[in-house]
Image (cartoon, rainbow, N blue to C red; front, top):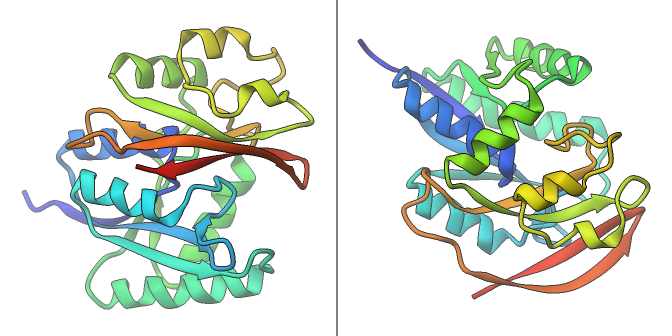
Length: 222
């Protein structure tokens, strides 16, 4: 049976990594490209704050092509959507009709993605949709994935939660009002080892800064 060709929306973090693992394990899909949005002024992954070079090393370790869409630091929807549509149309012409996302339970975000893909006659795939976020995080750890928090919302988590490895201790210390997967934007992460990677991505932690209400921990490539 021929595998369905898909684009994978890649954030570099925990949920993306588990989602890609599930997609690859299913045997139903051929991932033709990872797709990531980069802030062009900072040369880092939007929101996650991860340097582009570490993103590229992730893709190399995974063994998949990587496409990057560069946007301004504070883009309006029209800029983002125009660049995304141009990219998607280029792959639609190659016969790719599906984009996979690691979203879990935000209905408004799912609706937005589906509506924008419909404009170019493509569809969305959500392998983790409506799964329990405690179970997702537990599976991620049990599979041997390793990830570090790169950004946390200072209104919900204090500075001690950024630059932390996500493990049992981390989960046990999360306040009750914070989703274990950070699905509401409570935190973002960078996955650097695990079953989808051929080798671990080396880095060291750098300065922690507070910017626009978020603590960011710089990751310095080694």
